[in-house]
Amino acid sequence: MRPIPTLRCVTLLLAMLLLSACGRAAATPSATATPLPPTPTPFPTQPPLPTVAVIQSGGPPIWGNVASWAHANLPAGFGMQFHVSDLQVAASDGRTAYACAIPGDQTQPGHPRVVVTHNGGASWAYTTPIPVMWDSCAGLVVDMLDPSVVIAGEDFGGPQEATFDSGQSWQSLSLPPQQAILQLATRSNVTYALMSKPNVGPNGAGAILAESTDHLRTWQEIDANLAPTNLRQFWINPTTGALLLQTYTSGLWTSTDDGAHWQQMAIPDSSGGVYMVQQPTGNQPWRLCAEYYDSTASLTCTADGGHAWYYPPIVSFWQMAGIASDGALLVYDEGYMVYRLPMGATRWQKLGAAPHTGCCIHYTPTSQNGMLWMFALESDGAGAPPDPQAIFSARYPY
Image (cartoon, rainbow, N blue to C red; front, top):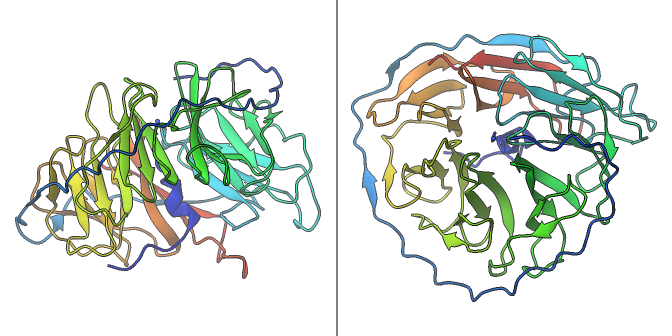
């Protein structure tokens, strides 16, 4: 298996991803308050490595219900282009996606524009223009639980504007310099955010996990009871409020009391990796799969919050696409052939090959099971990608 390319569309899945409603008051936010976190507790002993069961293959992959891919184009000037424009799919509703860019030749500052689709990319509509002048619109963050809440940023650490009504109105976020919101989830009028905060805070990390109860005006850090580490991303159970947090240095952590206490999850490989997490419903335990770079087994999964882990049947694949609402694991190979392993199955199913002009495939849930998305390969700054406006989507066929 090849290392995962550093493409922003993969992190969408930070995406992906996606994931309750934020207050709709349009008051202008005030300056962010300095958090007063509780005294950090001693760093706990890392839990022992769990035993991992091996699920034997029931045979080579067989054909399943083949996905039918549709091709559409973003409006002119929009696309996944590094440091210029961005596109993000709502983690809680895979039919909704936003794209941001500066219209024109992008050589002069302008008003950033945002377009939105609610039908899987078949059609796009302009939102209200953002009332600022930026050189680019390179960072979008869509709330994981409320797709009407979106944050647009000039750059990855630059100023940010927020909408709480799907782009009908925008307001500036008042954050300290070099601080930006990287992930967002609103539940019961409490908003959780992974925020960049270089070399600041009791954990000394480049990112912190914080919450706001006043419409993103002020923030309180809730990860202070973790020992020094570096936060990577988080997930939240929309029913119970349970949190799952991934770090770069100490694996996975869970909290069921709003970050007052954290418990380290036992994982089979401490070297890190890429995680795909199924969006939980009700009081369901965390179900996730990890892809490790230097392990003899490329995929390791748990269906009970990390108490028991297993190796799925082996299949030749390149990257994970996600864990579907029905519990099936979705992966794809270098030819963009999509494979599906139903929950509890021992044999993979082939869902057909996606278009070969995209960069990566990811799954997001919808009320009708889910969507598969693929976008044109983003630029690394050396030049525009081929057909940067092209997008492809397919209804998850189960």
